[in-house]
Image (cartoon, rainbow, N blue to C red):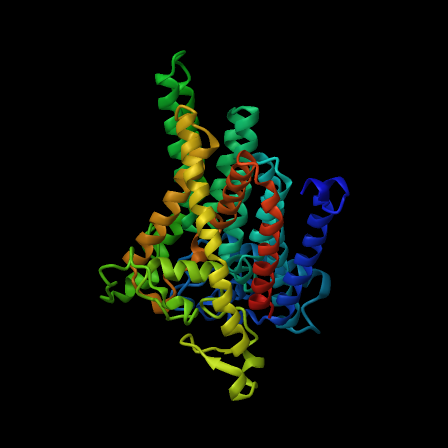
Length: 463
């Protein structure tokens, strides 16, 4: 690799630039071809925005079963639609081709901003240029991020705000905390909570971190600072509550319980049950048929396939696939037709993606070990560990509370922000290991692997 750098064959900045150009083309192309009504929830997210856009009112549960969702995302997109109306006039254009497509393009650029933030954050964790580039490429081509970008949903905007919060948290931790910086974090967290209630995972991670720092400060050799950090935690919590309060009152009065994580499923009152070994079973059938509902008796199989491949068969041109000859398409359990080539390459992609499971585990263990070696200090590493653990616990709790897998109560996109963060810490850990063992020449092999894995992921998600 030194030879490549010395002879300027490998120039990270040029490769990063070219990758982002490709990513823009990739995202915009999918936005142009993909019909948002093909997305999760049968286009209910889009219908929610339409209701706000056309009536200037929030829907109720009779009008849209997602009406219990926090409104910031839907209201923001509806307002953007009105801005377009102002410049183009309401007459003379097709709503779908003009407004809806612009919303899709907007989502595409939100996705690109997420990857750009990952690029900026990766520099805080490693100086290794190969690791930084690997984190960016792996995040940008990861199936769950691409799929969530294709259609219009609040998950993508929430991921953007959480990763933005994470970015500022790192910067403020390096520069030093003060009231102004706590206020910035608090306001961004409050907005994130108005996008989706699952923002509570990151909010609680910050609260636990602030509380731990207070305790750590009180027990440190020099002492002092405990009251200050508890004060920061109190300010943080109060501001978030004040931002959320108007919606909370409205939700309690018009829809149902303020803190219900899924009022729609709760109201159905069905008695589905998960198999007893659901949370620890590893079902390898996913490598024979990588689409829903294969391995639906295994939490980890579903999350694995949904993260690295198109498990719910979302990244498809459904209308085009319907017209294919029978010998060129396969009907999967979701009710969609996919091409036979996509079926085969999805299996290959899942086999290649096993590598990421190993570096994810290495990254998490390395993060924990680094925190322990640094005397359990309240570092960024601790915040990440809390967030990772909290995210998976929340995902498990959600599907345990609402075990209706056929209605999508378990998706990797529910914790979308965790995947690029895992990419950063995992590639940073691997770079550190290779450097210590003087095995940096293996980056040539690794990038050959990324090239194959990335090509497979592009093929699967190119609509």
